[in-house]
Amino acid sequence: MNTLRLTQNHTVRLVFMDAMSNFIDVRNYEIAYSMFSLPIKGEDMVEVAKNQNKAFLKLNYFIKTILDFSVVYSIDDYDTMRPLIGVYKNNFLTVPDFSEATILELIHAKLSVLCGVSTFIDHMSLKDIDTQIGYDLIPDVSNEYNLPDIEDWNGDLSFHTVPWWMRYDSSTFDGEAKDKKEQVEFRNKMVPDGELNTIDGEIDLLFDEDASSVAVQKAGEIIDLAAVKKAKKDKWEPKIV
Image (cartoon, rainbow, N blue to C red):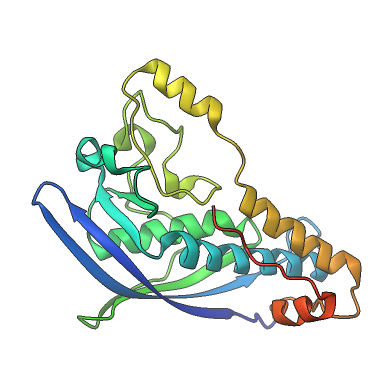
């Protein structure tokens, strides 16, 4: 059976804050990926198409709205960076180290979680536009990464129970609370990611409203949101959180 893959390229800017060296570096990257979907648990091709459309929008939302212009800092610099988090509107990206190989694995792991269980990213690349040096990741079936687990990543006062690249949300932040009280307060305030739920709801609505008009119901094809907006005469776009 033929498998139709979708490909997408984005350019993102990342601001690296090396607090230990007192150095700020801005890097321009091109991120490219290919993805495909397969039916699982008896899903029909309509469900496969819905899942792939959801995954496609979530990935692009994360890359362009969350990842682009993120402030990247090492987990070892968390205490130094902590006063800045929440003060600036940039997204903050916590990493084990600044290497491109690590960043590529982090992004692939996060996007794989956002894709769900029936859509797969079988290739991803990260290219430094200025140096023209790039890295390609072709995951195996186990999707194993050279990334730390939660015990090595944070201590007992970690704000989250799993690292950000394993969480189904749009956050890229991890850190430790000052004490148990702050940890409990943080976890009690956590809410489901509204934007991801909005994307799911909008795609379900488009497929359910009129299967024969705008929504394309073939696996591997993506709904033309511009056509949907024109047909419905109603503007919809992902909200920035």
